[in-house]
Image (cartoon, rainbow, N blue to C red; front, side, top):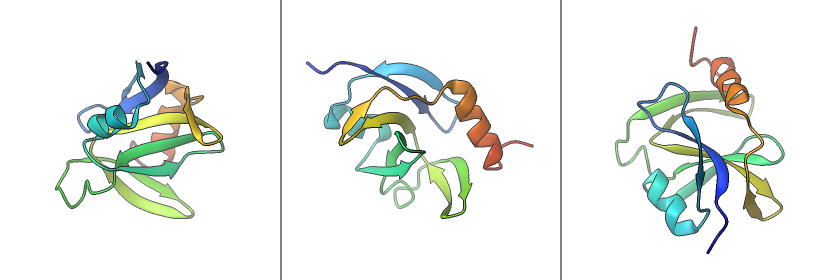
Length: 109
C-alpha cells in the first residue's frame, strides 16, 4: 500500500482548493483529475497534474496560468503535488503560496 501524500486539490467550483492526503497511485491520480495525466512544472520540486484532454471533454475552466513560457486556462480538477526525482512526494507549496500563485496569474483582482 502506498503512503498517502500531502497535496492541494482544486476543483473548478473552489476558490483556492484545499489541502488533503491522497494515494499517489496512477489509478488514483487519473481518477482524481478525471483523465490522462498532464503535468505542468511548478518550481523545482512541485507540479500541477490535470486532465490532458480536459478541454476536448468540455471540462469547466478552473484557473488561468500566465507565466513567461506558458499562458493557458486550466480546466477540470487539478492536483498540486511534490516531486522527488522521478517519484511523487508531499507538496512543498503551502495553501498561502498557492493562493499567491493564483493571484499573480490574474485569477483575482
